[in-house]
Length: 205
Image: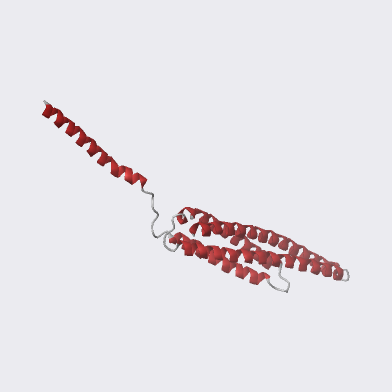
């Protein structure tokens, strides 16, 4: 009788141990954090590539606006459209950068290097956006002076010539006002990107 009791107790103990060991892999598996793949820098490469392209587009816009001569309303509008597109692309880059905050909290290969490069380019783009705003303001000031000269000279012109000059002045003023608004929107986008990429840089350190 005593032997049966001991045998039964042994079975209970062994069963309990077996259940404990059976549960342990599941518990350990639940505690393991989900790791992102080693190819993660691909997203960082994509961000950096898009940022470099916007930097190049800004160079083209600055080259178009940085002139002492008079620019036609069509060219001014084209420059404004370019700034609008760049601003939209930079907003997309900002969103992509925010999405990578979780990745850099557990840094992998090259994360810090890419975050540093992204932050560096965002600062460069921010400075260029500031220059675009200065150029737009300079063009607006030059347009006002030119409009005053045209207004004085048009008094001696025929009514037809005077009408053509006034129409041109109004078209230039409208295009420059639109350009100034696009330049401000671009500046806002670059500031947001600069702030976002700065946080990414800090998190990657």
